[in-house]
Image (cartoon, rainbow, N blue to C red):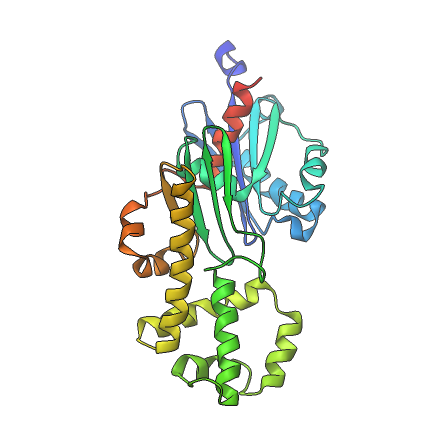
Length: 296
């Protein structure tokens, strides 16, 4: 190995979310050397299960890069994980042995924000299964919402699904107009409210969010209830964006699985002020890894 290769630094970024985990290794020039994928990596699954998913993803990236122990020891890792804010989670991950030169952890949302704005000041609104606004301004972190479904996560897929189910039950009773959307929701429960109650007892935010595509489809087709639900969600996202600007964010980017279908429903002033993302959450994790190196 040459002297320059022996002193080279490598950067590993991992985005561990509730649906899957992605890892990427880059050199100092930003060349991608290896990538890996695995299943969900969220603390809801437990620390051991989340770390196992992270390790599976970065092991695949290391294998693709063809790294031996000497190169692995020169990797600086940044890990973005869903649910890292849960009590004791960060300390538990920091206590896990690893083979890297350094490692740092943030939430998957913070990783996405770092990537969206190339590590500079800015904010994001994530509209997916859940929702949250996150940003950084002059070294201070901004946060709006995202306290968990059903008490928060306004404008999210889970929120859309909850409202659709609520209104479908009212329509079944004759307390609300019955539209094509609400009829289709009740068909999922065999037109039996007791089936809906049984489903509710075990339903997660992801289960509620599974109704979101149906709601948006009916809204786009002109269903009046679907339109009201989606418009209400868009108004919540509008508020997220405006509040982040009010808090000093110079740029705001809309991300998440609902970002594209919801964007046409946003207020014109909000749509005009949104910025596209510079990079993804894995890019943000790599930025975190480089900051760790810079702080050494």
